[in-house]
Length: 92
Image (cartoon, rainbow, N blue to C red):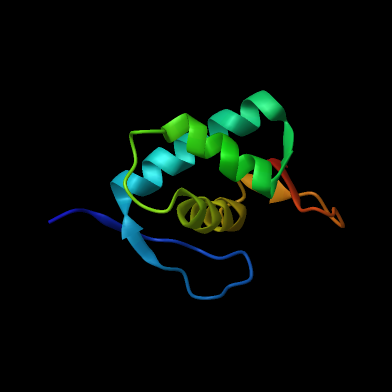
């Protein structure tokens, strides 16, 4: 049986259970992109992560990026830039 992780949500909404393996792959890719880019829009982040994991990931990369990004925000590892349109994210 594969190990699961319950994600957190920055607004205290209920998280979801996802594969820890997939969580780790996406988390690592998000942090790698943010270390290089410093600040990036959510859509560009999703595209960059897709390139990062290309051929090494089974599932909707955008869905996992959204889920893991929210979890990382809730854990204080990344943060949204206040009042940014489009939404910008960066390392905390």
